[in-house]
Image (cartoon, rainbow, N blue to C red; front, side):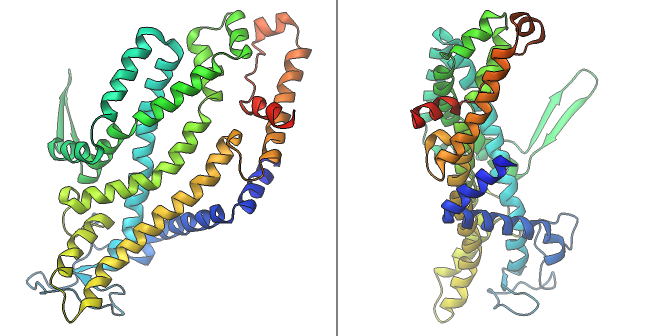
Length: 361
């Protein structure tokens, strides 16, 4: 309960973060209500309904109306595409970030904890990804990645079918993990020098247990903050790939693809300039607001996950973490050596304990 109050104070002292929270929560509500706000008309709900008879192909877009609030683009309902595109944005941003964080966490943890030749090899491998232009690499991977993967097994053949969105997610995750690996490696190198890590080794904990139970929990917070900040950038990058023609086909509810098809009309706009510009502005407004919301929310989430960075009500946050550190000290000092050895009462202190000492000294 006290932690919740600290989080409320952080948001109160950072109004922009509160605005970001409201934006993201609004998009969550719209995404959950998408089947009601824009009822699907096909088996795949992400295919925009065609607003005209199959034999009729309109020469241009249509203006907003009561039946189509945002108008139509090449015959497809623009309102439907923008609403269901929110789900695609959440799916793309969160899944891509999770995959990238998982890869970076594994490689960075191994490199930072074991050091030596292992660290040198993994970091040079990571540097190779930094040397590749990101957008060029993503376009190359998306273009070369097959839609179907057939994996022969002993008793059956496993077939994995990927959509255009799935290929973009994998490509962005493959190119997006190096920053996480470098960050977690540096944090682990700092934490592993602490006394509580040496104590864990002294009571006989294995390397794996020391890494997973004592080092990682005190090193992962900055990486989580970076992940929250990067979700908006991931969504923007995915929309860029779709805009360049490597995304879903025409009629799919994805903002980048909708903007790509709408911008063709701008080159020939004359009398109906506003009408043509509206086709680009509406999905672009959804995309920009969504990315802006994650950027504003990420500032607060960074301070929540890593209070050593400062900002917000840092003193209150550190006091809360210091209470957890005092509880840890009490458990250790009141326990007998036999209890520590046989019952594993050794608890990992919160990372912010050092920050509290530096703040209030």
